[in-house]
Image (cartoon, rainbow, N blue to C red; front, side, top):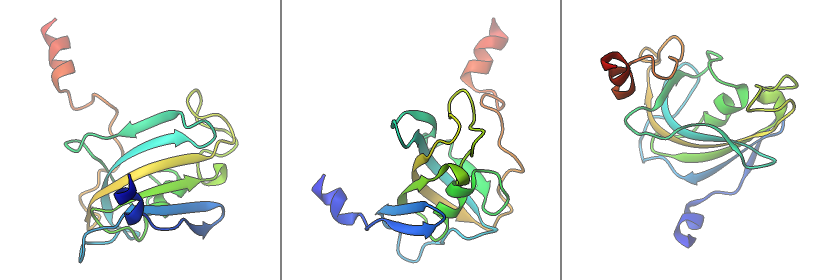
Length: 151
């Protein structure tokens, strides 16, 4: 635990109530997340007040890939990733205004909820390899779909 704490940076305020803390620095010389770049990440999203997980993508064989600056994710997540080098890990605390706002994302995210993301940036691309939109879970098939077809 102490070794992990030694690698952590102090929390930084990025404005508008958005806070980030690097828990693991990115690799030396690695590409850095910038607007227009595509990023592949693993993440866990929790409600900041209760620490209840509402979303996650933690399988390294199936990272979440999206383009920064294309409004494919909530603003706080996108802005919180900028400047992180590939291989780095970061915590992002996002106010409701930069998350799902007063509407929330019911039933999992209540209105006005602040969000807490734990993110690992696997790779940064040139923006051309990001999908136009996120596929629904199970859309690619896989073992679960194969079982359904066999039944």
